[in-house]
Image 1 (cartoon, rainbow, N blue to C red):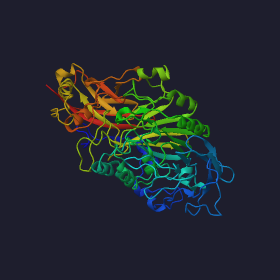
Image 2 (tube, helix red, strand yellow; image 1 turned 180 degrees about the vertical axis):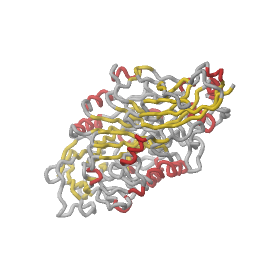
Image 3 (cartoon, helix red, strand yellow; image 1 turned 60 degrees about the vertical axis):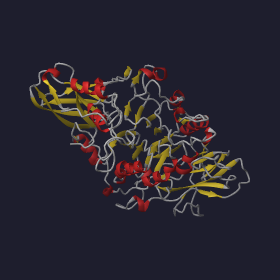
Image 4 (cartoon, rainbow, N blue to C red; image 1 turned 30 degrees about the horizontal axis):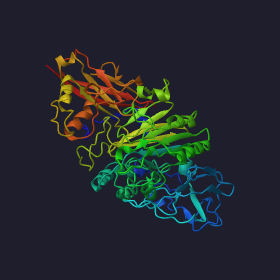
Length: 602
């Protein structure tokens, strides 16, 4: 039995997915360390990583209105440009508003202003240095007087503009490769040291065993901690076990809530982890990391006052940044809050969404986000009623993926023997991470559940009249306090005459077929057709496998989902045991199977 769900068994990959695994497109175990990137075959990342930092040449600069410097190839990897180390032409550098490219000598200059972050966009074929915790180093904060007094410190005074800010790069076959594997982790969101250990024993232990993401690295897209910014050092310790660079975005729980001015809302995040927006290139992908959280300063502040949007400087930067990107490039647009989503389709949206869509028009784009602690795979053309004022009747212009949280349902539920909780989220998805497998400009995504592998992609259950009565009796109780439903995989012959469904929650799914007792496969019906309807909510549309775990042991409330399929069981099933084989196929043609054994009684 699968320990995280009580109602179904673990899945197995069919030949299609096994072929992908054999080709290296799926998880690569730590023992199979790859050679690209200049690292010897089998040499661990920890021994070969390019470690260093940005070279800030003390000033003050005679011209305090212009920042200049060099992007150079750091042959000896000491972070300082030596006479024999050439500058690199055509590299993008920004001050968070203006964007420029380096000249033939690798030189750049940019307008300077207080409270700016200057950063380099890592070019393909090169890698920025990482520090001892694997955090990418590609930026310099300029805040002469430092942050206002903040509980968690903010940015220390930087003084006058330095003479130069130079960005070292090392040549990298890893980022040159057209095949990339980019880990996206949402909502680590640790509130205390116990939850830090849950994260360490769960997702981070899984990532420490993988080596497929050494080029692209791991991008953690917000809510890195849960309001207590003093936990950032523990976050750095977590990513120190990775086998690739780590980058971060802020979320609504990464704010300096005591900031007197909105321009300092993320100062502690910046000081500890890096810029709140930026971009980088790997292979033929351009990753754009956006800060979509706005927090209006109020006295006293309320943590729920945040909204979704980009300020004027970030919007100007985004337009300038995308203008530098070649047409034959896929753009990965990452943010904390989703641009649009299914679960909150009538309310949650980014204010500048129409302008963002206009900037990206005609481009190959995949959007990834977190925030909601659930998984959504929204495809081009999908439509919900709450989106029509933005996208019209044509639906989404490109794929939007909401990534299940590292913390799952905020680390709730049973703590398993492995040292992390079940934490089933409110769409029925377990905690985990998303990986974007990119080959040239083709993107294939895979969700890996904590403690699992690519074969675990669905949960099966039975939605019976008896289940729905139990649901209604317990839905208003606190999660984790309901009595267990007895014999959840048993249905009476009389109940079969009503509405009884076999349910398949296929997290990254597209189509589902079910064969009962070896009979002809029948296509299951997706509960949400994504054709302009509103979300369907309640016992009838819920995921019984998830609900049973959540009601009895704690977790979310999987009362709606855009990736749930139902097959009505035949009314003439004979009394006795039956086996359903479920075949689920995703949009990329990968096929998975699972079985559910249930019983029909008198």
